[in-house]
Amino acid sequence: MNVEKYRAVARRWWRQEIRTLLILAIVMFSIRSSLADWNDVPTGSMKPTILEGDRVFVNKLAYDLKVPFTTWHIAQWSNPQRGDIVVFFSPKDGQRLVKRVIGLPGDTVELRNDQLIINGQPVEYASADPEMAAQLSGIERERGIFATEELPKSPHAVMAINGVSAMRTFAPVQVPAGHYFMMGDNRDNSTDSRVLSQVGYVPFENLIGRAQIIFFSIRDDTHAWEVWRWPWAVRWERLFTLVR
Image (cartoon, rainbow, N blue to C red; front, side, top):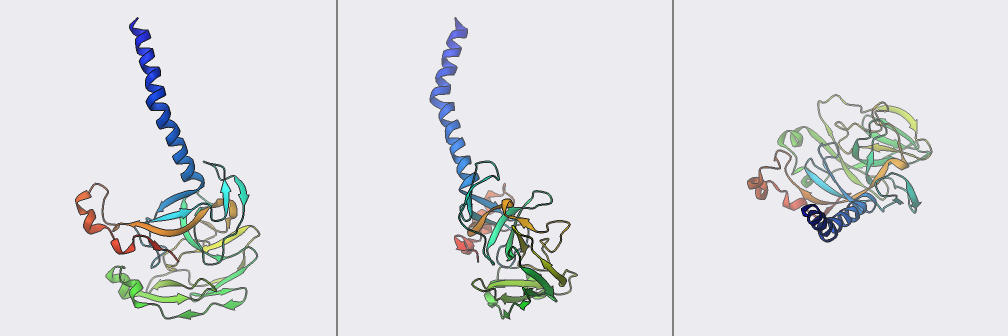
């Protein structure tokens, strides 16, 4: 008798509580999987544009629509443009990375002493806004070399680090069809498509979406359990800023 009573309670609990929560969870995770997502940034490879501790909103509908919880493409309506900041799965180890699109399919990309050359045309550089380095560490401001890389329709800040050994030159390479060449804005501290053995060319199907907004940012030396530090650790001035 008690067994039947417990079964009736369990069925009622399932109908009234668990089933609703389960459906809600499936809907929410499906939205995150196919429509919109966020990405925490643990490294400084995109400085000074994106900092460690930034959380960026990722528009998964920027280029296509995927089957929830997969990388299968249902429909495609756009392609990444040169200068877009995208989130993608590394072709080598599946790690989620945030980088800038530099080379499109068929492009020839070259770097000479930190100067980017695309399809034989050197990219122009201009002086950078001094305020852009204000949120970097003292050592980075002191040793950093900053400039504005004048990509057509997408000028953006880049930085190098004086005295650091880095890949500042590589011979011309041609981006394969259906692939993209990615680079970090922090050119001397970014593992990207320049390192073919670790990242290399990124196929379209590995793209997750385009990073568009920094909707939260907390100083990278703050731990999640240090709630009492959050009012002082949050970078309020970075909240809801566009990434370009």
